[in-house]
Image 1 (cartoon, rainbow, N blue to C red):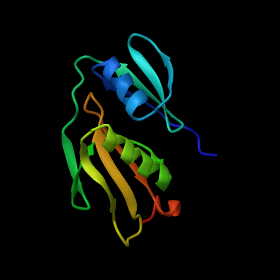
Image 2 (spheres, one colour; image 1 turned 90 degrees about the vertical axis):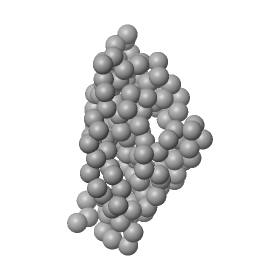
Image 3 (cartoon, rainbow, N blue to C red; image 1 turned 180 degrees about the vertical axis):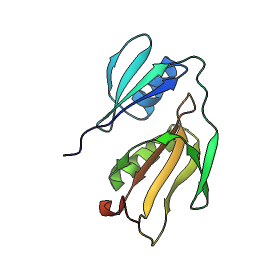
Length: 138
């Protein structure tokens, strides 16, 4: 069984973070304090730590004709869950850095992907594969 990962990341506003991850993305909230919040991101533990001076990094790398923000994090979802999340993000009016689409069409690693940012500017990528065996295809 694949074990959950843990990721801690900076945010500049805990209320906006709670609304985004808990409300918009639907992540159940775990423990919290006045300086951090645990969220269940599709079975993985992410922890938003308050840093009022947090600023997003503005590096991008070209991937399949798009400028992919670095760093970024996210989860590989099942295709129906990916589509439901894309619809949820669109309905919330969250702007996409890279619109939901399928990249590497007809190649090993073909995948549905989308990028957007949280209220602190942290870049998120969610992806899905028609065939999960393609996750590490070369």
